[in-house]
Image (cartoon, one colour):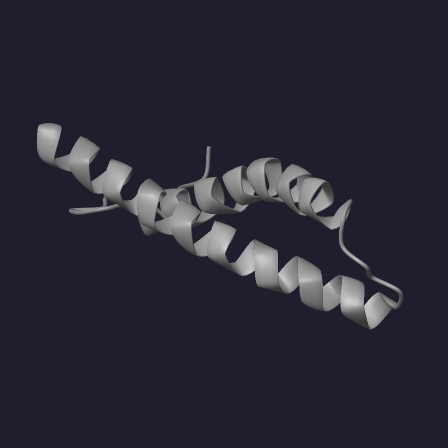
Length: 79
């Protein structure tokens, strides 16, 4: 069997895991939240819809990334 091309041994927080988890959780939480909040909003054009999704999705992404990073850092410290 050939040697793996890349190996990782993170000494701290595994940023790859943080980014992947943030992506998945943001979609799972953010998409329903944007859909729910857009039900009462007047969004006549695609531009207005995109702007609304960005205004709601960006804070969700930021909050999710901070929570996931804090979780990963705490788990690293517990080991």
